[in-house]
Amino acid sequence: TEAATSRRPQQQQQQPRVATAGCDNRIRFWTRSSATGSWEEETTPLGHGASHTDWVRDVAWAPPIVPGVDVVASCSEDGTVIVWTHKDGGGDADGTNGTWEPTLLNNFGEPVWRLSW
Image (cartoon, rainbow, N blue to C red; front, side):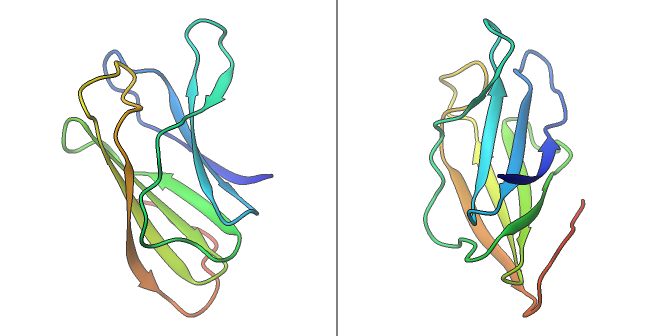
């Protein structure tokens, strides 16, 4: 079950994408199919390293600053805020290739419910 969603700011010639937070301690990325119009979970791998150990309560897509780089932050009941960075690999037009690399921003020691850029 997803707890929160954040939509990527639309850039030229990109498929709409969203990030969702869930009670399974994970974030997921979704792309809207141009063929069917339905939302499909991306197969883009999540990097290893930082991860949440409790419900992810919010996700927020950063405004685009660097072309070809997406940045999403997530926060959790475990008190952590993780910043996920994805660099387009240049292969797929919708930018779903490459890996989402996590970086622990901070562990606040108390549940973090909301975040924004």
